Image (cartoon, rainbow, N blue to C red):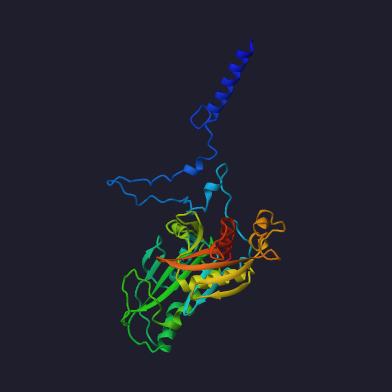
Length: 368
């Protein structure tokens, strides 16, 4: 076989290999197809058919947009880190200013039927419930002064009415059950209303700023928390309330420019308190803060972000910091529409992508 023929065959083989390895060839390389993947539209039910019986029992939670996934073109991006911390109490009451709410270390779909069972055990009927939004309203009921009540709900309302000199009207309770700051946790908010008071919102979607009997809210939250902690309710899970877990209060996403940020679905006061608590839980010292500007000043080391004896890659990122390897960063909180947005700055510029993602994830995981 001549050298010319051998060379020709060799060139054809190389060309064939390139053709077979191309996405349009015989052998398709799908290693980076996830970058172009799109979510399919929801199933459309014809108008002449009913969709009431269709329930998605295997809901895939929305993980949100992953910052800078395009950087991982040959492999799926690594999951966001989860920082270790103690689970803490199973049930606890949190307070911010005059506001109080219960935090339960269980999923909303598990807590929802327990709230309903608590009311049923106390003889309180549920008038309206919306598991998708997490809102539950009792019917109106009478609480008569001097009457002897066995259930804790009516007896607590009776005592609160006497304390606050409320003699008229019927009472009801409104609950809001929602996803907590941490995955797999639930928050329960409670309001009391009386139909003799001017600030009544009968059947409205608005959430009252405070209970009409201010002393009652903490009492009933204590009783409900004790009821759930005692584990006396029947064990069940509401399929209708599964979607509540997808409505995250805190998530790390990326903006239009691909830069990472932490989005809180809450007001500024609570977000500010959450960041401070998260830094305390993570044992990161705050060197200074400016609440009016929404800025925490912190000195962070690689070990703070990865909690590893061998920082490796992140250690190199911090090699230009101070003598002890710490980098001075700013945690800036701002309000955008109805959300609170957290970004990480080093001096006057956004911090490096990897550092921002790690610190924002740490704040998310140590919150609550």
